[in-house]
Image 1 (cartoon, helix red, strand yellow):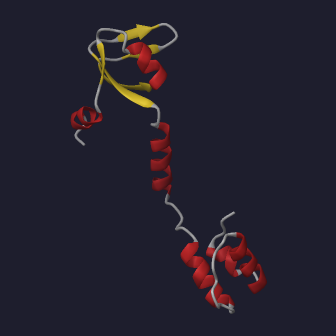
Image 2 (cartoon, rainbow, N blue to C red):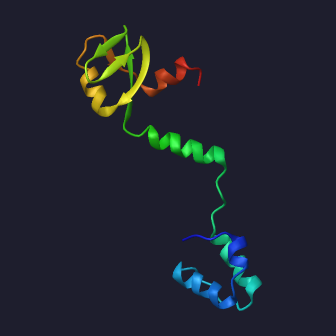
Image 3 (cartoon, rainbow, N blue to C red):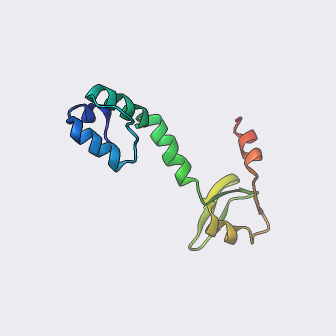
Length: 117
């Protein structure tokens, strides 16, 4: 369990030493609360901003996704629909969609160029 510096600063020296030992953080010859807090502060990762959290969630949701290009609007039972142009689908769905002659895999560079990235 990672604690913030504010939470750690309320702990006693013994509690800080215990926290450091539990997290395999070497305190060297530090004996004062301030020295220990300085070492612990260097081990605590900075908090992520809301934007960074959203970016990470978006990246996680894109794992196992494939970009496809469809030449026409298409529909398959139990699979959904593709619109003309670029579509993002799961790997499983892409395997089925790629059996259609009007659907192809769209490379990431092509999709990025289309959207101006």
